[in-house]
Image (cartoon, rainbow, N blue to C red; front, top):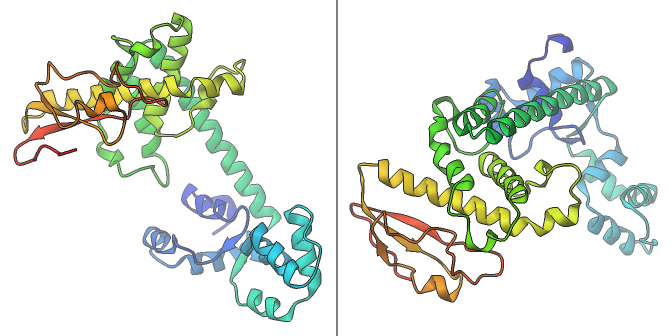
Length: 320
């Protein structure tokens, strides 16, 4: 195989060694199942192609030891422990500790060659560009309230990935499943604690919250407009979480309404949210009478974390 003929799956494996790495790690079994043969065998092939090389001693020290470990080694040898990691690695390397050298020599660690680095750099740039283009299209769909197309665009992107995220079967993914949540984020009523926000601010937050909902990330700050400062982004974290919570609660309600196995009831459930929410926890409500989430009377500083439990045959009502 010529390195110009590498498919994405081989480039993805190569990218895992961008900063060096063990030939066999915790994910070896996963890769073995994909290739049909061992990662070790594929890494040997990469070596023949001039894409990876055995790491030298200094690189092994850098990969295997964090700053705390490095400082402890230096302390044990009465060597000053100041400096950044690169400087600490150099100090440990200069010790010429034979025991450490023997341990390092037993570790199968590789680094990318210049050719390998160039292939990985180009591959990651292309992937990053593809992701940005998809995200931009999704945001356009959200602005037009075309929630189905927004969810479909995200699902089609995941299908094409070597390792799609999460436990979702993306091949049978139905965009419609995400639509109720997006409607919940953009719809009424607005969470009580957000009712004083200007309309343009609220629309921005809804876009950001929808992207967080779709992509399942913890930090959605990259989807704010570029002219918004990091401090302002941080201040809106609470509002975004409330909107996402509203989206998930609406998705749950929609699932209950359309699921024949779900009885005409839903349980308001919380685990240590706040005193007001605890008053309702474990209570059974009809689908058209359940308090909307996030709960307006919630007093938790960082937002309501309550959820719904659909009432199905054989499911006991939780006791809190």
